Image 1 (spheres, rainbow, N blue to C red):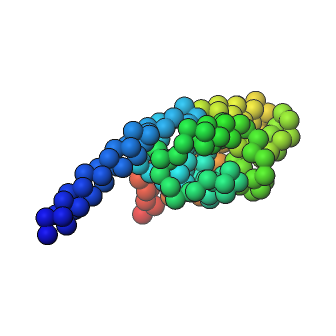
Image 2 (tube, rainbow, N blue to C red; image 1 turned 30 degrees about the vertical axis):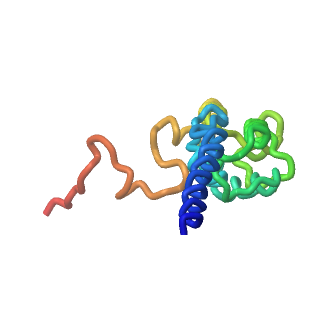
Length: 170
């Protein structure tokens, strides 16, 4: 019986060593595209935290790079995280369908791009300024602070002094 207990104690001593070895290589924070991602989350969920990448695009990226999307991003080796970082930060995603990209038919180049984080914010603001400069319908709506995409404005989107309903005089 003593030998069984000794074996159990030896097994207990070996298990924490294996976990410690995993924790040594584990990265609690992974930095991609200027944002800190939680290492505890799966690769797909962590990538979808980035502005400009949704859950579907994150799934496409993990399949394209042959990375396990369900594994924790902090457990990945340094080489794989570097591959993911380089791919995400490049604007032209090769092998990704056009419908999954967020900036199609760029006004300057005509290319299909997928932009992430600050690049996306800057390009959107540039596109809005271009519409304002051209005096397009959407640009004028942006200038006036009104709804741009065809929504009704009679009852919704009221700001300032226009709040309230006017009654007919009897």
